[in-house]
Figure 1 (cartoon, rainbow, N blue to C red):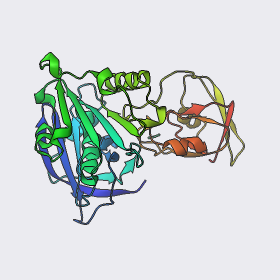
Figure 2 (cartoon, rainbow, N blue to C red):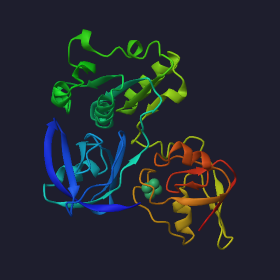
Figure 3 (cartoon, protein in one colour):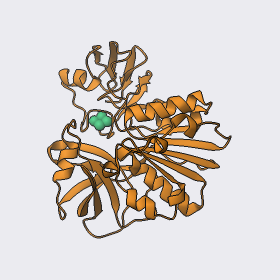
Length: 318
Ligand code: FES
């Protein structure tokens, strides 16, 4: 994927353990445009690649703004981000969007949990600019852990924002069932936040009768390597005809490496697309969060770092 060198222009403490990072082109030029819900891959020291949603208004082309929670359980990405200092340069991919606003929707229900506010904020900016009908529910543990609360309160769409804090009075807490009740025909729901929060929202929405096509979630945690339905299968190298067995507890890239075949790798969890490989025959079992639904449905490429096979063999364009 195309990357460009960017400079950290500003780093701001937005909330407890959360900083925002304003990135500008290192050469000072305009940036590739993006749409609400887009994310960028940020390349960090040690070969780490992390995805972060853009949270600035989507009509801005002079900067990308992301926000990062310092996560003690992280594998190094959030720590590396928080160690960055203004003036430092880093490689950033062009924006990619797996979490788009449905253009035909007549009403949008936005739900954010904690740092999951980032793409939702961008969506709210876009909808407000376009005169779209929406409500934004923003759930956090406390106000001190709620980034962009002031920006939301000062925004032209403040009347559409409902903030809910776990440590606040009972009457302001989010009643998920009530928030998603009685979906109208043209409504679409978008949720981003911790997995438990997203699962609770989507479970309540399904119970309330929302159509699956009207439900949208941002998922950076990675559906990758769930271990569900893992089984052994074979991959065949198209150029040589060599057949390699992938054991149930082995990734395709590990099996390939053991046979002396290397595939470029970066995140190794289905996030970045670096390992993307063309599939000539067979049916991939996609475990990544990189490909779009349309790309998955085509079945002609997969991410061998985490994805597997539904057929007994995949023929790979290697
Ligand atoms: Fe990142 Fe496979 S290495 S998706």
